Amino acid sequence: MDDAELVGGVLVDAPDPGRAARDLADLLTGGSPRGSRFDPALVDVLRNRFARDRDRIETACALGAAWVMGRRSVTRAEPWELVASLPRGTPLPPGLRRTTGETLVQLVVRAVRTLRLAAPFIDQTAMSFLADSLAAATARGVSLEVLLPTRSTHAGSALGDLERVIETEGDIRRFSLASLRDDAPWAHLKVLSSDATAAYIGSANVTRAGIAGENLELGILVRGTAVATVERILDLFRA
Image (cartoon, rainbow, N blue to C red; front, side, top):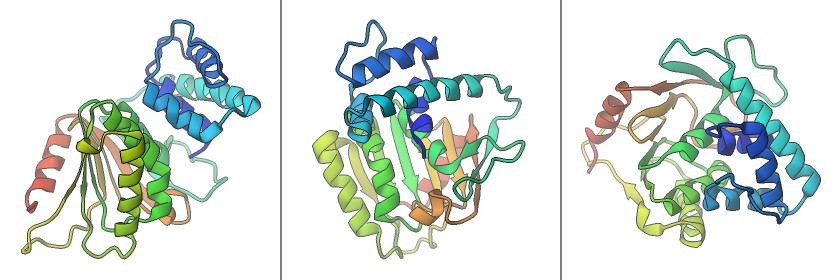
């Protein structure tokens, strides 16, 4: 995910994205927010990424505001949107406006109650990409549950890294691992659900290849009552 998408996820609900972007840039460079309110945990995520590189911060905030305005100009008729992982630099074809990494971070940033993640393969690179935003979610009271993969050789170390980030930057009491019953089929589904109202469902594992464009992946961002059914499916074989 590039800087504009990450900042855009923070600005996405601002009534005036341009003004909010300027306030955010001031805040990240040591100033005050001048009336705009940002979640302190999300601001910390951006500080960790940008340090105090003023030029990078100002550019990212300006592009983030433009990203939000571009999203708002799109009329959505369906309760779902296509999501893809494509090689870096590949232009998005008409009808495709979301990348996998961007979609996952947006779901995390917007969550207010619960996040549930399931993927058969998880690695440290992809988890480090998500870890700061996941930790920030727990810090603001979101409960995070990860369904423990049964065949992923790198999941243990990746989830260990995530736990350490949450212990440092979030609320470890909000983090839990779920396991499947012994008689459960292999959980090959890839899902990130947010508040039981929005979810990513697709082919991408939580791996570098899955979300960084090394693989070609397709999925959907779905909203509405169908997401509750997705969560019931997650619960079918849960221990």
